Length: 419
Image 1: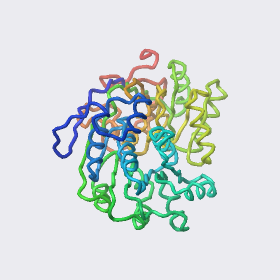
Image 2: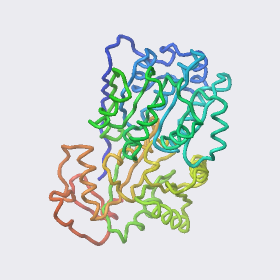
Image 3: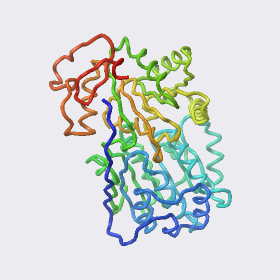
Image 4: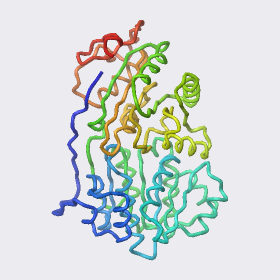
């Protein structure tokens, strides 16, 4: 299906305010931050930034959800750093579900701190040498960014103290719960002072997140920006229905027809390695990233992709959230995600910061149930397609022959004609 996504109307639910924030200068940020923002060419805050920063600087707890690519990281990093710059005491802890997200957030922190702040930081994630982290912690960092598992390791060892941590950020909370970090979050909370400010971000805020928020937040302001079930408007989406045997040849044709960098999502770690090797042999520079790689390998892969050393990044869902590489022009779902919400996160790796991008799904007969769920998530009122699964118990109809695109009318047409 070729479809240009319709515009999203941002809905922000907060406490009433009479002030409009058209510029970062309107927040009254510390001069060091203002200088950094100017250097980074950040001038106008996004909707999530305007709402979150203003409330956070009032000392309020915040429960927020925002669409991917909305500038969420700066929304919590700016008020966090501002709080620390304006007080000689206190520290901040940022918890994230994956190592890549933690590294990326800390990069933003360092860019905003610059060289004059004197605020030390620590990156506490799995896969990194323990001595290196112990050295960072001995320097008494005021900002700790990490993943729940390794943070808990240090707390249990007695090598980390959080008694003066008066600013807490929980980012991608829904993902952390999906990954089984709920118990670890509860354990970490025991080491934190009850008198603190907490910002919690989640892609969606279902009942489970509401319940968790009551554990950590005090009378929070609720912020919702945009539709979390709808991709950003400047992503052009396509779907090609094919067979498992022909899927790779379809992929090769699509790569040849497209220009620019590509991220390809697959289901398994083994599948990521296998596909990257095969693409590389067929003349498409490619690398794979997944959870089995050591941290230094993952860092090398991401750095190489950022530097355009290779064109194609083959990834599992470890890269579906938070990976911010502006030059990604295409997202291809070689395998559909198990969870329909992950489709939104996957294709959100393109069209960052207002750029345009494209997303393609390669769909085999056994994917029809997943595809139906994705279509219903994006648009519950979308017209039915002959490829939708009406009766989940009915065995999907098999088809063979040349792959065909899904047209606006819902009927298939040959790939040759659609090109």
